[in-house]
Image (cartoon, rainbow, N blue to C red; front, side):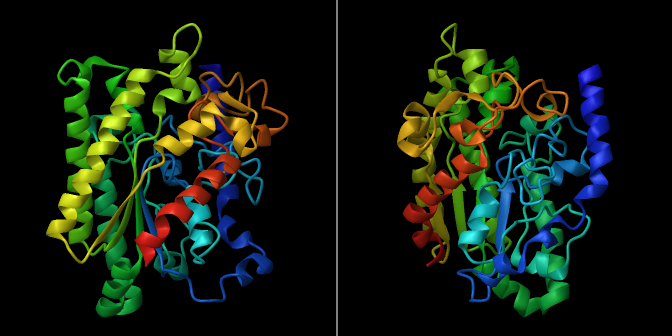
Length: 364
């Protein structure tokens, strides 16, 4: 309890330091965006992989607005990103030529320019299963859609009805989810495992994801990329909890992820038949990330079985805090920052793969 109290107290002291972070980017960094971006805006939904600070506004243990999170960020300050630096949405927004950082929708200092170039609605700890978001707690996927509806009204107020409709249709949308459903709910409690076998639970998640995607289409989205579930059984925390004495990858978790991913591809094809003016792309990262973890030296890393923060075995969110005894001395050697989330360097390698292999389909 003393550790938890210290972490939360520290986060409160830092909250006032977070205003204006997006505006600290140098003129040199902004100059690269003088040319027309590939798409006008990027909009992101899902869990902590895309959360750039929405959880800062929640009463939840799943926050990261305290050091050592953000120690390698542009400002060297914590922002609520579950990483030592930038996260995939920042890196993708930069590659698309939109802006260097994708802010959280719940940020208190958003400008009109921030809004019309895109935001993230993602919340650390959420999932496609509505029970998952109650555990953290986190912003449910359904509530993220409600936030998006409010966002649309704000954009209409800036650009007008026609301008907003065009912006929403031309923008890129990214969705990530499913990892918390497996790691935090299905394999950690009987709430779902007593009712569903692994195959039927994969179908349950797929149905929820499909419903989310189709409602997003109804709200004006036309270019949507959906990140599949990664090899979640290989992240350090799941190795510790489910990997046995040797801390191997939790194979059953990976099997369910693969079942979901294979069915997701087919489901997207069915959705496209019903919405033929919509581009849907499965951003399948499973095999690539699994190879990174299994053969880290191929990608410029040395350590893939523990995180950089603390022991690297279980620390994440409030357990990876200013009172943590150790943080690795050379984060560039590590694939994982904490026991669940990759480092900025690992995200950069992963985003390069995604961008090269999938984004020409999404934004063409």
